[in-house]
Image (tube, rainbow, N blue to C red; front, side):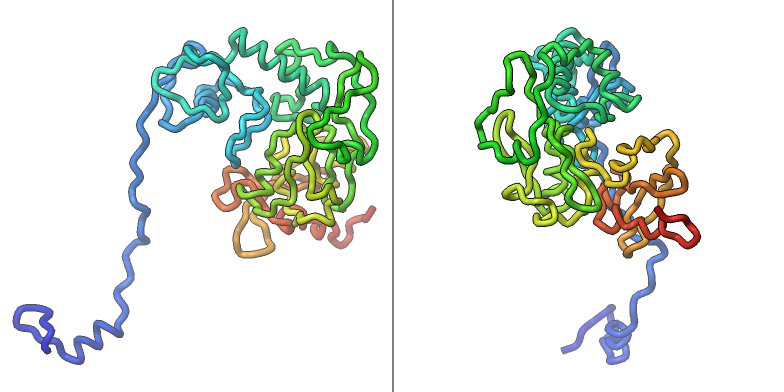
Length: 351
């Protein structure tokens, strides 16, 4: 059988060898990604100001595009919104109830109010409920100045009107509560709280669940949205709901791989680097005196982006930008905690 490559040209062993053995010429430029069609534009009104955003944008994204400040707690750029804290709710004309800005997608013609009387009352109630039962002192994302007090003052929230806080729980007491059973505080004039001793059972990070607002971000980061370890989950129901390891075992006995991604998404300081916790306890933690240096993790070839937080010429913690295309803000144990070798450099006084 004769193959024909051109009219009047027969295949020869030399031609076949050239086709099968000789590599093709290199491309003059790297292949480009196929063009992506831009999403249609949606026009909405926020606080009386018209704004155009791409279809699929959330109300929170539209507010940020317009520069409208909207408080959030349970929202994280690198996780799927769970809309449980209800701090970001806004009023949409025609809607029966307030809607969470972090997860509601904009629709053409939406008329959104971010500071109406209904919104202010709702945020006030949420802040009061949280403040009456949870330590909100480190709930930084609530306000630019890094404290929940600023927003509490803005909305006139007064958690003390529910009564003085009840006595803190003893070590392990909340973990032992039976699921679905509310344990009333001692006395009728006190507000039940989740205050309990800090769990310090490893050298890398501590768990202070008296600051936990059950935003589920740590569970998602430990689960299928980032680490896929599933070392922690929500246990219990109602007021006794809490973040727990399986069978409430200490962290070293759990499936935890110490990636620290739960710390990276925690908005209230319930999960914290041991280095930061110890410095706060000693009164030496000062974020205004810290420098941030963006670099690449040195441990492997993945090229994870890391941000080194340094104070007094010492690295105190490591984070990763949530908009990094490599990490999406998540790291492994080496990238997040493997920085002590830098602090232990020769000639440096050791504690």
